[in-house]
Every structure is written in C-alpha cells, then in structure tokens.
Image (cartoon, rainbow, N blue to C red; front, top):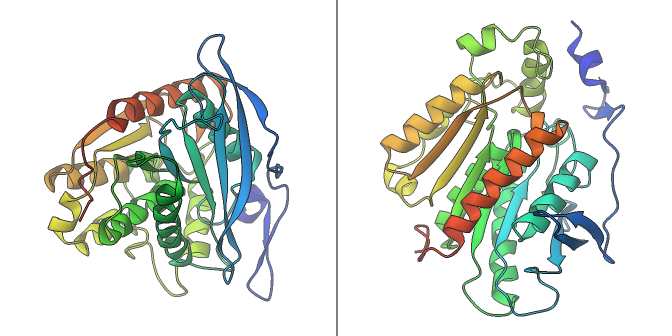
Length: 325
C-alpha cells in the first residue's frame, strides 16, 4: 500500500506537508453549545481559544461547562484537564472535529474545564517540538489555576494516542515545575521500535493504523536521521533516560488500550515499567476494537468518557498530588 495515499497527505519539496481531506476544523463557541451529559442532564459547554506561545503560534482551546454541576460563573472547583489530541504528531488539530467533540463531551460529563493544546505538528516541526509545547502548556496551567477562583483546583493531564505520549512528557515537566497533579490519563499511548512486536508484525493490513502508515508517521515525526529506537518513539529507550525517583513522583495513572491496537505490546511494556518504578497504575488494556475507535463509534466513545469520568471523580478529591515539590 502507498502510506501517503492512505493518509491522504503529500510531502512537499520544502519539507512541509499538504494534508488533504483533513477533519473539519470547528470554531470555538464562546456562547456555548448544548451537550448531553448523564441521563437527562444537558450542559452548555463554552469554548474559547487562548494564546500559549506567540513565537511558536501555539494556542489552547478551553472548554468550560455551565448548567447543573458546571461552572456557570460560580465558585465551584471544577477539575482542570490539560488534554493533548492524537494524530501521530502529524495530523489533526485541537479544533479538529473528533477531538473538539471529545473535549466537549468530557467537559459536560465529568464536569470539568478541559484545555486542549494546539501543539506544533511534524514534519514542519519535528519532535521534540510537541514536547516543548507541552512544557509551555504545563506552565500555562500553573498560571490558569492560580488565577481561578478558590484554591487547590484539581489538575489532570490527559492525551489520546500520540497525545498520550505527549501527556506523559508533560507530566514529567509538571514534576520538574512542581505543579500538583491528581492524575495522568494515557489513552492508547502510541509508541514504536525498530524490532517489530507481534502486534505490529500482524498489523500490515490493520483497518485503522496499518503498518506502512504507522512507519511513515514515525518517519515524518522523528528527528531527521533517527530510527524508531529513539527515545521519542521506543518506550524502553525513553524510560531508560528518566531517573526512577522522578518517575515515582508521577501521580496515579490510568492507561487505556484496545485489543486490536497495533501499539498494544508497547503499551504493556510502558505499564510494566511504570509499575516497577512504583507509579500507581490502573491499566485497562483489553478494550474492544481498534485504534482510536472511540472517535467514530458511539458506544466506544460512551465507554471511554465513562472510564475517564470515573477516574477523575475518584482522584479529584484526593490529597496533595505526588508531583508537588
């Protein structure tokens, strides 16, 4: 198969990418959009874009709910979730319809304020650009939480697919910054390596993330000349460079996976390494279906939102986060 054709992208002579057929970009909704939450409950979710780093052209899309249990201008301490979308570091934006809708659903159902980071994409900005943007976002969260009414707002970091790997890096940045975290949510973290795992070797014709497309995404995202054993790709190489004491300061972590997701073996490697380092882990790696299925199957989306909601509810009222200095 031609991975460029499959992904509907074209590599240009200047090193940029033409992304044909990209998901529709939705504008923010300052006036709010109605979203169904639990049962008959409906909340209005307001969204606005805020600058993150003007020099890099990065922004944050902030989703805030109103209605029963929401913000509504009151003094309630809504949890704040810093969210990183997926797309192999190459595709999608915070405004892309699937991820915009995911954030509105999270904001309405938990309820929570959700800050979705519009980080720089590869190959125009190869890794570690997205990780640097994540560190900027952690500093933004510190200032946002400090400026919010009340004190002690519960803060969570979350990412889906490649965004989960970004969220992990953001959590390490939070440890270094002394930002208190209540939890880290990694939804189908996307990793790789030169030697194929069994799951990767059997994914040549995967219906969502076929192996040639997966390889191309890594080729476009990694530094020029790097292979898939680079620390930005291989979880074992990544964790080998992180001090164990630093890992132990990470907050409780929820890791979600799917039985037919090509990176599933790497996800198990990550979970085992974090457990061995003493990180409190809840691993649910046997979800039904394929990679990113929650973006286009309503029943999987509802299950995913329920899992995240349960985790946030259980940890939002916990004591001081492990990442406080």
